[in-house]
Length: 227
Image (cartoon, rainbow, N blue to C red; front, side):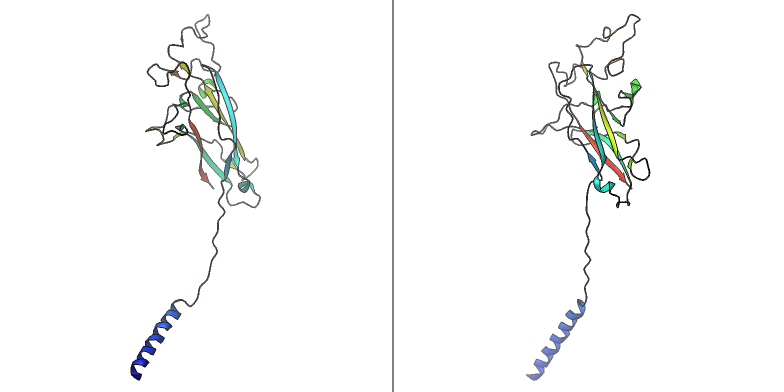
């Protein structure tokens, strides 16, 4: 009987000894990170409201670097590159999307001449919608000409984004033979600076609703690099 007890005691001692050796020391490293956007956009919506064919409308908003990015003690990253994209705009509370507005829209960054590039201005044409079904893709329009930065003076901590809307016309309600035609057979430039409307909504287009149609899109400012 004593032999059995001694064997059991020995087994317990060996097992406890293994357990003690397998966890004999530990150190704790506290890992943390403060996550914050490097850029802030000082607008959430732009509504041109009710507009009329061939009007030229512009609207601005500002984007800039965040307080943390600008902090004097934050020197690890000093440049932010970004691009401007457009997407279909969802109609709230429904699975549907607004008819596309980009056919008549222009975008610029720190633009000086607020006209389309084709009229000698600085605004880039947005154009047709992204490829694929609505809600499945975004369309690139342009990259910021100069990244936001605080590397060396002069700093570029804020950019002004300009949207230009050349309000489209409806086919059947626009006559290019008589619209602002001069005696010499040429046309007086439109308010946009162009000779013709940017976009004519054809009768075959679902957007052809001469009594009034709501158009829209989502403009996305996408950070593409921080360094």
